Amino acid sequence: MTRRVVLIADMQADDSRPLAPLLGALSEAGAMTELFTDGSAGLRSVVLGGTDLLVVDLDTPSLCGLDALVEIGRIASRIPVLLLTAQESKSRRMWAVGAGVAGYVTKPVDEQALVRFIAKILREI
Image (cartoon, rainbow, N blue to C red; front, side):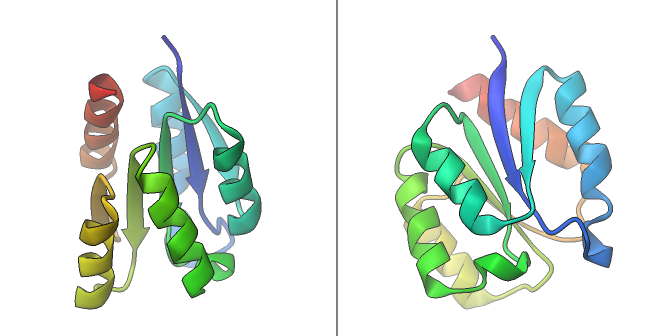
């Protein structure tokens, strides 16, 4: 069964370049991955349904507001959400745990470990 993964990330940022191989690895693992560089459009796509996992780069400029975090928290109550960030923040991590996200990863990430983690989440749903 093919799983739909929505990835929201700013592919223009220097620290997001490693996400391109992640897209390929997810595809090889059988996941249908959709990339959104606009956070609002990505969140709207998830809300419309059919998403099995949401992977969000919190450093995407259009996701820096409280409204985006509230919407991600709402989504996390229905589908697994994995957050990526370059900024370690105790308050963000506590918020993520409270919102019920499946994982919170600080960049730079080990791509293979991240793909294994995502594959595990997709097997469990």
